[in-house]
Image (cartoon, rainbow, N blue to C red; front, side):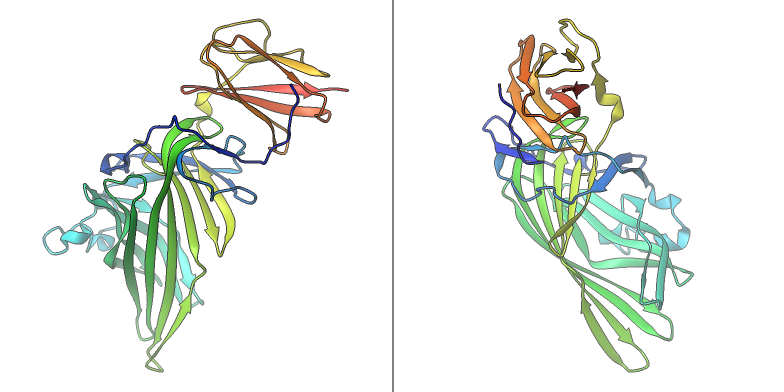
Length: 355
């Protein structure tokens, strides 16, 4: 068997993936913590998609780890809660939970810090209803009117929706900042997503965000409007996972970051030789012209990558296949990572090629 160099991201279609539906039970609740890793999205293909797709992003290597914790609205600063904990006066903004958000500033005149974003979910959708923050050092409650519909439920392949939202922040004796946003959602694919430590059945959502910032300067009695660069979020969403298991963000047409689910506890590494029903291992190691793998009974997707994460081989292994042999004559000397992904587990082992 000859090895063939293929693109970094292996994307191909299959008719076997089952379509799923996403609803409010798949969104976060107070007390949930979403752990994730991030890396550069440069060179990743986020565009390819359709019904019954397989996305292989098993080459992703974490650069940084993080976590988002969802807290009750009542646990956030009291002055932040004005719009978001008042179901009688502001039912559309009555939030289910809050989560830390990014700080930002505008041209040195407006500083927004200690941010909490507020979210509302029900059978009709998942919404960002506003945020609380210290605005130039003063606590403020800022609602979106209308609210930002992040997802409409039930969410299925082929769905299209558009949501307009805006918020305004007053700057005492100076003016105000208003941000207008239009979100265009397209559920453009479903299928199977392979990540370094897990495999998911997903819906793939493309969210295009078009924003304009308007500044009203009280001294001149005039507003100035500035368009922001277009942002596209490519999201792979699985049931019960609270947040996208993969999110690739593109700004002004350029991929910037990839945020993805990465659970080291799911990795099993094989290092020995000899057949076994639940071990993935390679021999001889180091290898010269050929390498053999002992395989677990369930089979799966076998890939090999070099030290730069480039995919050099990929093939499906049928369940019950005890051993497979690969030719290495086309590979340069060095270390390679072999990964086997089944429907339930992920195995990794190192293969050293010596000449």
